[in-house]
Length: 110
Length: 167
Image 1: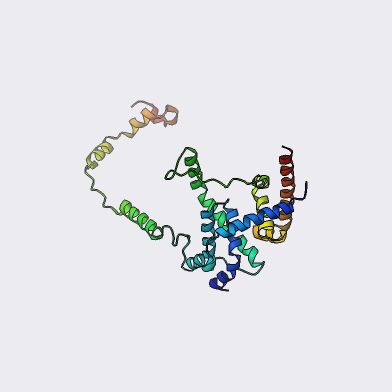
Image 2 (image 1 turned 60 degrees about the vertical axis):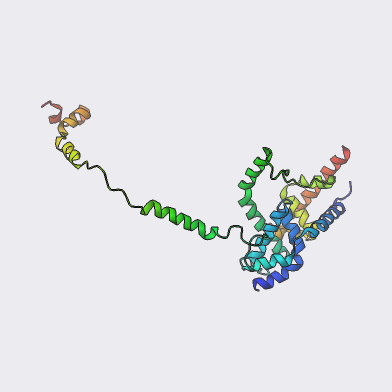
């Protein structure tokens, strides 16, 4: 088996000749580069996206956080006040806590 | 050196840079054009500046390689979905899926079986006519690593070609 250098050189030179024929024109590419066009198709693919995406995000945030909050439709303050007034801490403790956690006075039924 | 001056200096390297971009993009001409255009933009905007620490050619091939890697990273998931779609029988306007050019001989077939780094070093040495040292600079690896890739690539090619001749 011969050293593959010559074969490789011939192969890559053939490939190079083929590809150099297909290379796009430098003048057009450098002219586009000077105008900042990042795509060979002549311009940024979605130039509007640079400002449209942040603007859309800002609008969505504004809608979510700044929309007027609806006024409460029910007033539960009376019911809450009644519950607080009826709350019997001693009965609640006797019913819910195991007796060993209660002070001695609490474990004796009143 | 301004971007415009650097662009003017890159003109003679344009065909080789395109060939390298094609290699870095796996033979995809459109992707190679995108990569090269983005690389030229970086130069024009002076985001890629030549510090004259190496040859202009090796620096430029390194820039093209980095841009190609960035684009490949960005396009990976998109391409995976596209491949899955083509695999499931998807067609665009009745066209078949784009395919790699079929290897024309046993050498081409053997080269496609090499790992990416080994293919890159062979391309730089035999296509771009760089020395192994220049190839190492373009690939941003040490000269020792480049030399190892180069030797291993040739050894593997010998094995592959010998086995092909036997069959």
